[in-house]
Amino acid sequence: MSAPYTGYANGKLLITGEYLVIYGALSFAVPLKVGQGIQLRRGDEAGVLAWKASDPSGIWFTARLSMNELEILSASDDIVAGRLSHLLKAARKLNPVFLTGEAGIEVQTVLDFDRHWGLGSSSTLIALVARMTGVDAFSLYRAVADGSGYDVACALSDTPVLYRVYGEARDIQPVSFDPLYAGQLYLIYLGRKQDSSPEVTEFRKKRPSGLAKEVEEVTFLTGEMVRCTDFDKFSALIERHEQILSSVLGQVTVKKQYFNDFQGSIKSLGAWGGDFILAASASGSGYVKAYFAAKGLNVVFPFRSLVKTAYPAPDK
Image (tube, rainbow, N blue to C red; front, top):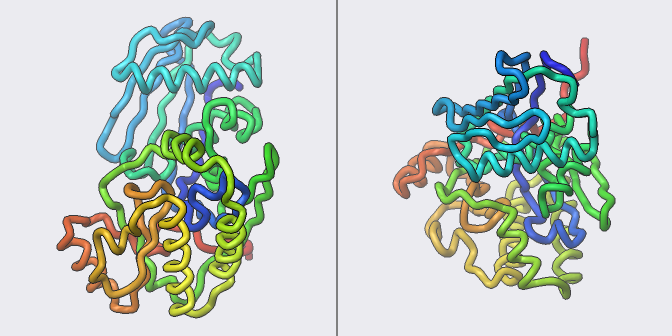
């Protein structure tokens, strides 16, 4: 890898299979129309990797690392810098010539979305670093994270995917998902960002085994949801999925806890209790936006506006 270099990776949402995907449940995940870009260029400071990260609010992180050891020289946030150093060292372990022979490098990453939204700021960075270093993205992911890797699959895919893990292996099948009722689906940010890594780790400790029945049922529901052409049936599938995870996690569903009077169905996404939810309602976008605005939730996306729903159209 040498400068200059540019790259881009997609954000993600996990529609089905949260938590149970790590035990082999078939999950449905979607890449987003927002993501993260990266630009590398030769730097002016010899022996230094200068890093700058921004999102729509502006620059939120800066750091300087030594080129040889990838150790932190200075940083605006030591915790974030430590994670970055760990990621870059893992990439170098997989590709020992990474960043060798360079006098100095400047890197800028740009998120298309608020970094607090949980749409893949970490997974997009892993995918970007893997691409620019020429290493396998899932190998790099395993070196620095403890999840299923579905988010990396989304970062690298331009279509929704059916995702399943088998030990160290994975099966990724591209699918199209753009039913007629997609206009009745909405994605709402709850304003309580969850860090999925500790959530997954805690779940593994609490439920290390004994989930075969739930894995089988969620796998069935995932297949049904992806193929579903009927809005009422899709809504029923959402509700059944919520009941299963409610039982597994020992938590009340998000609809029952916060939105019991909502005209439609609601499903948690990813780590329960934060990030985004999926809402399905036949009452119209005006109702949906007004309902959640009254709850203080103003980040509401029509499903199609945020999600890459289908296979790209063929070139003419």
